[in-house]
Length: 59
Image 1: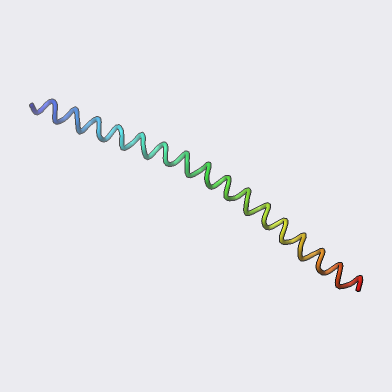
Image 2 (image 1 turned 45 degrees about the vertical axis):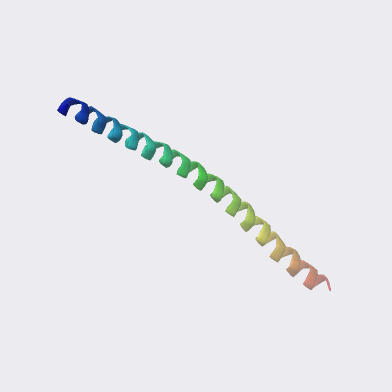
């Protein structure tokens, strides 16, 4: 009986470790996607500001 309890606890800890590893990879993918989106947004924002300044100077 004690052996079955130990094995189930080992299985639980193994599953928890696997879940943590999976979550880490998912978070890194999400962070990469978020970083790419933020970089695109920053470039678009800078382009918007530059085009606004150019249009103001041309007027």
